Length: 554
Image 1 (tube, one colour):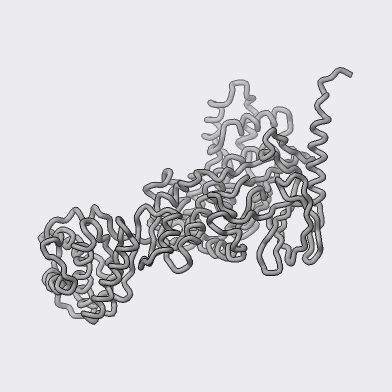
Image 2 (cartoon, helix red, strand yellow; image 1 turned 180 degrees about the vertical axis):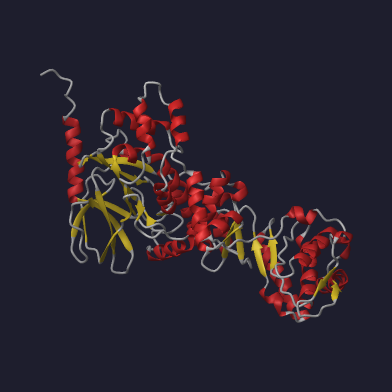
């Protein structure tokens, strides 16, 4: 049962404060902050933007995630005496003592954050977050904000791809905690894979913090720890229908096992007694939650027969077994055979509960194997995914960057020898243009001072990375993509729960044109600069090339 919402909010705030203290950053943020302070530039108004350069996994989109944690981080950002004393020990000895007093009084009361709503479908090179405030402070925030957004957005996008591959019917269970990159990676993965479309998690702490439904029953170690029916304690179970007399469930199960073997042609000599003991022991402990893993020895010769016998005994006592888990071999083929046996038992023994038993598949599932699963005949109801989900095997990082775009009201631009690493200067507004069918088709990046585009009115723009090619478009609808979410030390927009953001993800994905969300070879989504912004970029580039003679004598 989930903790009360107030308790969960407090626990989440503590979690973020403990996981992301102000010292969780790179040292050069402090050396730059000191240099700004030393030259009395630390209070200059500055604007940074956070974005990524390429859509992940070779896909056509990403999902923006991590904003929730960013807001909690900003709200609690403050250096302690212990933090400042440690910084004294690691910064160069020439650092003036007054700088540490400055750090001790620092907070985010002067910071404003404008961001895309969490859970929104986003695209490469679109500014997701705009962070404005005193230069030294917004510089110090860089690494922490990148850390909070990079992995959250990546794993959320990975989860969404798994959901697209699985289709809407099948339930998905995230079970990657043991394979995650440390405890924080495991918690972040559980939260944001749920946001991205997974239904359940095995991570109990994530269930407590974020209200995600948790699931899990037994591992192979539990099954193999038993060797004899003598180890089953107690050996009786009271029926659910109110009969107070305990029933000898071992004898009842043995009787059912003989009948199941006769029905299915099973060889009693190949059935594992230890496996049967494990199933019985668990069924006695949790008669309403009986879902064992059945491939510890042999699915066809032992596991499935033992499950059916124990499940039929539970049905006799008015309990409802849940199903089975398959964790090795050809999951599709085995699931079809398991379902055939369930239907046969249902019909032969007149036990309708067997018609609703579920089959869980877990066996090193990848996105590609999920796609293949849907191409083959199978009867799998729930798929559990671990390693390839939480570690994002196909791409380990989203590559978000945090770049300066304005200081003292003047645009700033990084002009790189690698054109892909050049930045777009100036404070901006971002608009999503939607076609007549309701599908987004272009994100337009404008200067903040420009008038917004209008629905039904033609506009000219310059697609990014297209060598000055101008295009004209007519949007049917226009949406302003970013909103103010933090200012003057306060969160100004309601913080969404994982469940609420999950709904936002599915809604945002549904609006996306199918050609943009194809898992393989999607069409590229358009991102363009307004005419005025394109002109600014061109002028700054020209100015940079003409402004390199400052060392020449007068």
